[in-house]
Amino acid sequence: MKLSCITLVFSALLATSVIATTSTVSAQTTTKALFTDYPPYLCVGGGFIAMAGTSRDGALLVIPIDVSGIEAPQTIARFDAINGMRCAAHHIELLVLDYKSGHTAKLLYNVQWHPQSPSTIDEVQREDIDVPRNGPETPAVDFLEWGGNRAGGYGRGDWYEWVPQVVDRPNNTYEVHFVSTHSKSCSKLGVTLLEETLDKKVTHSVPLVYVQGCSD
Image 1 (cartoon, one colour):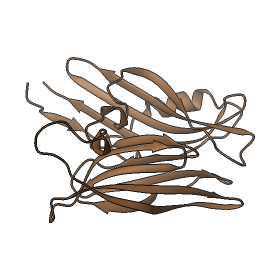
Image 2 (cartoon, helix red, strand yellow):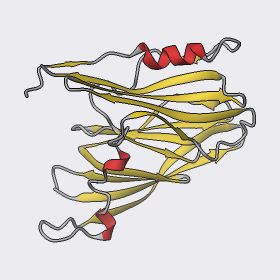
Image 3 (cartoon, rainbow, N blue to C red):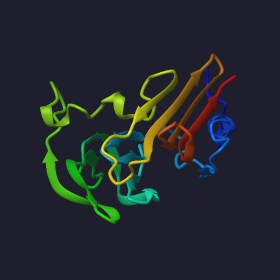
Image 4 (cartoon, rainbow, N blue to C red):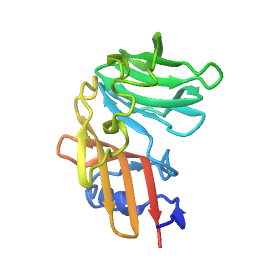
């Protein structure tokens, strides 16, 4: 069945749930998702969210959560193509492809928290990777096609992923809220970063992804 229409809009679905849970707290809500045309790579690290575009000229975006709460998204770098991403503690790993040379490289970024100031994100290592044309992949590229780092993965439903190791925010918790629905004619994916009080009232929400695709 050919894809006949792709509607790129921000959904009120997640915003409605936010409003319903904030009767006593005025929530700050960004009104447009950062990705609306395709699901990016997305992973949760210690006190940050990382997203990377999967189209040509893809960018690495990082949202730190610092002493002031959720910071503005930072565009760290752009690449010809990003083929994989994963997060661990205070690090981000990327697999990137350079079209001119045809080389694949593994990049390591360090997300460094600083007391009383915003976090910094720096590239600390770059390693050229030999991707074999035939045979098994080397361990260095074992996540080249790892589906779990796509926003929403292959899951369906409504679920949350906790953001660990957020420092100097003792009165708040942070979660990434995923809503993924599929039917015969349409599929929708919404991802929102939430700041909540200890009694689960939402005080700030940032739409990260909203993609809707419909076919006849």
